[in-house]
Length: 360
Image (cartoon, rainbow, N blue to C red; front, side, top):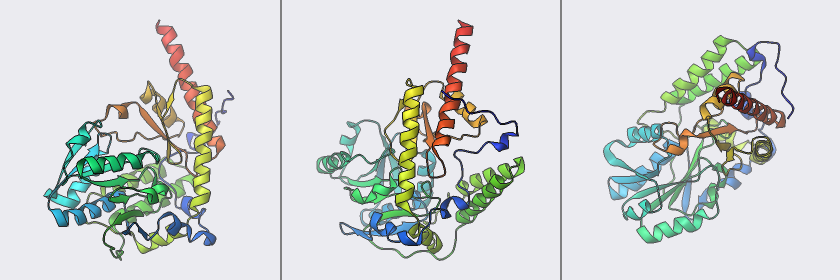
């Protein structure tokens, strides 16, 4: 395949793929003609459930569980083994001693659910229409309450079949808005949170870095990004800020969704053609996830070329997480960026193959 030529300039001359959004990455996809798009994708009411808007997905989940626990007392929440432990720790902080966690690893585990339990049903990097039948079957067999997690398929939340549903848009469009469908409607909060302030500062720092790359600016936006994540571990349940809701309602979801789908198809086709030994997991528009041997070596080489794939659920107890790599295919990127990702991975494969032959 065609190689991407190395730049004679510093490492900062290479465009980044992945990482924190800059402050302009959202606004370029705002359009005054699409303000109804938000309400079409996320109607105010679905099956008698009211739409509420929160700052993050964990805020939305905590609010749903708080509402549910208010009627039935302490609850047991069942999550898949690949669910982020840090997120569950943040959930514990918000709900205190009112919640305990159970992991499920197989369909047989789900038979242990009791009517008073709650299952968090994760849509794994896409919405599978067959999930509706699975959810209805679980409810009928166990009587448990089911919350559907659409964080990895945020645009499909209107298809939920469970008792509650939630998503998050901050990995889709850089807006701090999560949608939850629950029984009661809640008012938006007034003031910004510390997380939101740090998040915006991180976006500004990345914008400055992209305009005038330097190690100092790079370290600053990474530092602010870490601090903003740490600021999420607070007991308050934060509603979405009014200004963030306004940004979400002006976002061109249709155009962005198409760019993401095109990038996904482009990258998937190139990987399948040039690195057929790599397993591509099902997906559509959030991330392109792959499972591969020597995952950490590939990731290190990608990082060296300023391509920053992520490891989902790195702190979970799931063995699958040790081989997965998730590529950003979002609206910031083009087919050229996707080609660059494959070129770097193909080069790593060649290095590994040469090394194996040398050692033989």
